[in-house]
Amino acid sequence: MRRRFGLLALVGLASSAFLAGAIKVGDRAPEIRFDKLLPEQPVANASFQALAGKAVVLEFWATWCAPCVAEIPHLNELAEKFKDRPIVFLSVTNEEPGVVEAFLKKRSVVALVGIAHTQRPQNAYCEGVYPRTFLIDATGKVAAITYPRLLKEPALEDLLAGRPPSVPSTPPGFGLSLELPRDESGPAALLHVAVRPSGHSHGPWPIRGGITGANTAEGENLRSLVSRVFGFPEDRITGQPLEEPAVYDFSLVMPGASRAEFQSKAREALATALKLDVNREIRETDVWILAKLDAKPAALAEPPSERTSMWISPHGSMNLKRCDMPALANQLESVVGKPVVDETGITGKFDFSLAYDPSDPNGAIEAMRKLGFKVEPARRPIEFLVVTKAE
Image 1: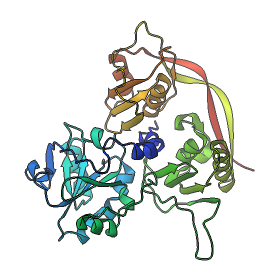
Image 2 (image 1 turned 60 degrees about the vertical axis):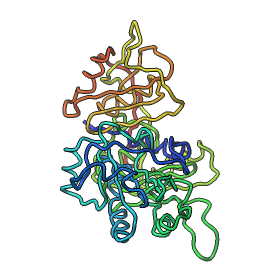
Image 3 (image 1 turned 45 degrees about the horizontal axis):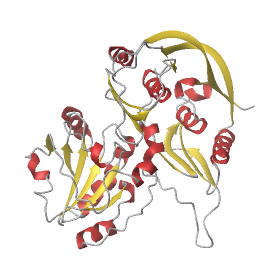
Image 4 (image 1 turned 180 degrees about the horizontal axis):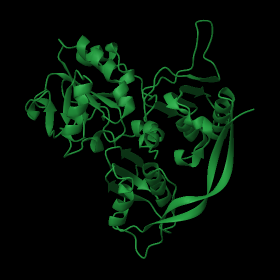
């Protein structure tokens, strides 16, 4: 069974969330209620009251977030360089303490690691979009909001000196630079395409990013690349080339292109570079049906805000804000690895959370049933992408 998690959903939200986050530059940084602080010490040591007079690099991350993990060496290097200065590196996660402690036994993090599992401060700071970096000045105010890859030494010198930190105001997606290639002899290229075998495999969560007119990935397998470029769920893509172990770096930058032009060029670039034929085909297949109900389940709550977000943790939780039923079905499909079809007839936007046992292949299905959904096995004609090697 193949499972995809919420990173793909987050990529599409990164730019808007960055520009319209709950916390703004100039705001006083809200206190965070920590359940545990690592290395082991009183949690009060990481309060902004205790850190008054010091600058803080506040990083929101998760052990399951590949872009977050990929940025650890960069942040460690900065923390080492500034270790004798009045600045504290504080990395915050809302995961279970046991999960975080097991991770830290395998990978060193120079920063203080704050576990805020009870309060989940990400909801106030960054709406669950990872990784995110908040620079807090010595007075406790937010001086800049950025991504870890964009954080450089001059910005930290600015922070320590009480100047506005020099960090770019436009996010690059999840840590990848989307700047067009240029040389000293002229302006940047108007079209940049690169597809190459990658020297970095990031497992089930490749580093990827996307803003208008740009789409990049590093260390992504072919199934995942085809899924993103063609806009198809991975479980609805089939073909022998997808079973090959190779991973690829992909980059397409096309300023000013319409959405249709950009999608067409991305698909053409991928198919041409890797000598693929990609065709659509209707197949009768086994699916899960979200069947019609007499009443809307109470788990579909009225959304209190206008912000949309969707994320799934590999540790067994799904959180959707302002989603409709087709979006819920799509996210459930990414967990169960099998087509999910919405036939509930329920309309409107909802907030929805689901906790399930990720070790049980039907854990998410059983959890949906306990919330009052009717989930039934069936067969339906489903559109697939069939990938073959071009002759």
